[in-house]
Amino acid sequence: MKKLTFIDIFIFILFLTISVLSFTLYTNVSGKPEVHITSGDKEWVYDLSVDTIASFEGPIGNTTIEISNNRVHIYSSDCKNQIGILSGWIDKPGEWLSCLPNNVFILIKGQQKIAQAEETDDISF
Amino acid sequence: MTSHSKVRIDLVALFAACALFLSTIEYMIPKPVPFMRLGLANIPLILALGIFSNREYFLLFLLKVLGQGLISGTIFSYIILFSLAGSLSSALLMLMIYRLFKDKVSRVGISLGGALGSTICQLLISRIILFKEATYVIAPLFLFSGLISSIILGLFANEFIHKSIWYARLKETTV
Image (cartoon, rainbow over all chains, first blue to last red; front, side):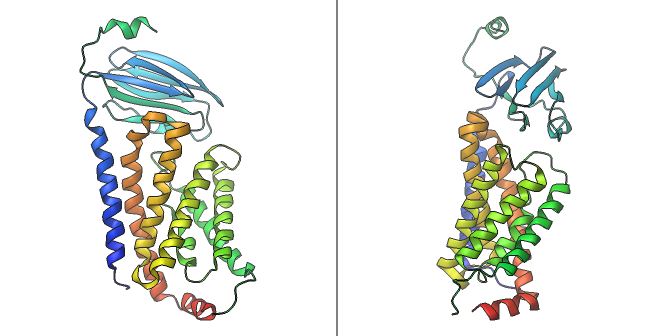
């Protein structure tokens, strides 16, 4: 078995550092959870505490999401491999789902702590 | 050192076939998230270092990307962009690391470097065309899975090179 060299260890540490640093980007997720859905250039925001079913059009068809009991999942999608549906339910800020073939991305974000009129989001949709 | 002006097409084909086979195996393994991969198809690329000339190596890389696209069915979709860019940056980085350090680096370092290059490159593309700002959420998962899988691949390659008589003979006929 070939011994690991100094350069192996160096590249490992570099890789590990970048990986750990990428985690620190998570720190600003807190507060009231919102579901952000991105499809193409458009973005929609839903309240995680309000049960909804919504459909989004992508390049190959529709992707439908369901929000229920403070959780969200992909209910159906017109894609071939159905990985998004298999991913199941998510409920915490920072968690995400996606349907790559249909270019739909679902992310739960914690709302910013800055006071915001809660109704605004609902009215705008 | 013999001249490598002529591409040893049979050898490249053998490695490419191996990559194609490993892509198939990889495709059969269920993954929780798309593009989270083990990178099994990179094993031939890791092993090819030290045996292939730059031209042969580049040809192998092209065949690997085409094979992967063919098997996953993404060859004519935008997803091939990720595969192409990721594989290109990883192939170039691995080649560079190998040429720079030769025996001072083992296949673990080469594999890690390749995975790092490929992951960062794919995250950048994702930032531009796919997930936009949301890319930061997927970054940790991809980086950590890349870190772990590339260490395993590197250890395997080290072991393979150490044990394989076929590989040793191949190396003798090359240098």
